[in-house]
Length: 614
Image (tube, rainbow, N blue to C red; front, top):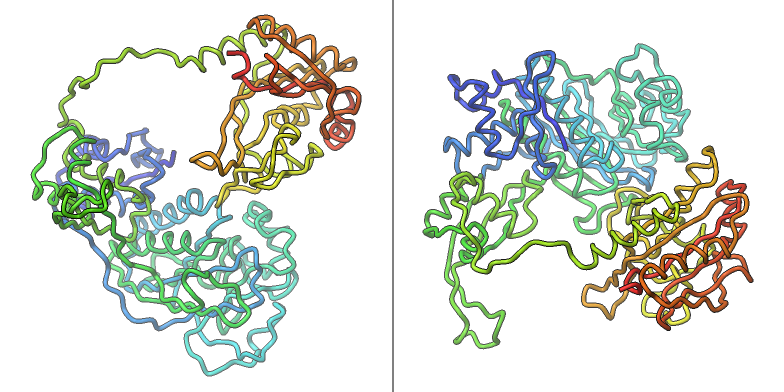
């Protein structure tokens, strides 16, 4: 989980608690869910916290939470903003792989050495969390006084090899342009360098460029940001030296680029709140996606940023009391919300969830809660209840026995899993625990499988060919779906261990899932038993012998009628039928599956449903 370094002298100044000791701060922060991890060599305190509270990635955010806890602040705070004086113009030449941009201007920031260190830490922590290592969102902070804004004329060249000093400039003042640039196009001096470089040179010759080269490698055009004087930012890799921020900087220009507009907007908001705590005044920036540029459909081509709109959520009084196990007055709940940095108002409403008749519906107290824009963690009524509980004090809750007495014990499926693993280990297999998520390439293509369409008849589908349960916003292209069968995971382990000695006998009892619209969750789940035998003499008979031994341990009747499966060698593959039901497959993996992975030994394998052994 994220760890943030806190200067307690800074914390005293930002909270107004000049007489608080480090030990007292540690106790207060623990009540907020931040755990003390130790001291740095510079005497800063390190705290670990849940990755949902990204507004606490800086001393300013931590101080804000403490001020609410101490009662010094109450309710939702939204910084006042000045009207936009700057425009970010998004050109159609921007790479489709990184189309979105946002930004803000913050004037009058008090940046001493500690403040600058805090800003740098917040920037890097946001990169590592919300920004997914800069892949999803990257931040550039610039000294505004070093920018000269003027938009490029619509007819000027956008190939990325423009010499901005000689470009035909329009009369539009205070405009910067987000565009694409050829890898060997315009030159600039990057941070921590004194030499002019092209973006391509940066990736090869600059340490930071080498670190983040994979984020843009392979693109025909790289993302770049220009002002009238030329290129000054190469996101998501590095800023230019001309606009470097130091302790003398007072007016800042913040730009963020990425693959998701909501993500970079929220990263921008968190930065603006931190700089506002340093005395900065937030100023809007207009974002214009020009004709041909990819813009976020949910927002449109013209935006005013930062997006400081307050969100609204609702929760019932009864649900709060049930979850926390305490009785609370309505006004007390409102007070607890306000001490959490939220605003709330309650009203009586009829519950129409159980009946269409409002006259007979039960009246309930419902709180309409306003959530500040920096709270990216509040997604559900339970998040609101968590805030109420923390403001009340979890240590103040008295433990009570539940109304229904139960005795804990291992679930029957868990017992079966453990017994099957024990059996497999006894047969010489090494027990594996693989990721439940994978990609379509690994799950289908590299196993020579064609995915069946959602809603299609699966009665004759090969094991593993079921339609995928896909992730809407995957973290990585390597993990885009839940795996539909377990064998590809074991084969990946074999692929990663071709440098190891053989034999390699691996097995797993694990979770699989596929899309099924007839299930109320639209995802059908199962647990599978899978094994692979990788050795110079591995045969179908070896895999079947071990499969038979597992079935014998559980008094299960095994049959193996011949079948066909694209992942297996014809004539050396059979259906696994236990108790008369078809539950899996056993055989020798197809040579194409092995050659694709540079494997030089044959592999025999099996997979079947765990429930068949019950």
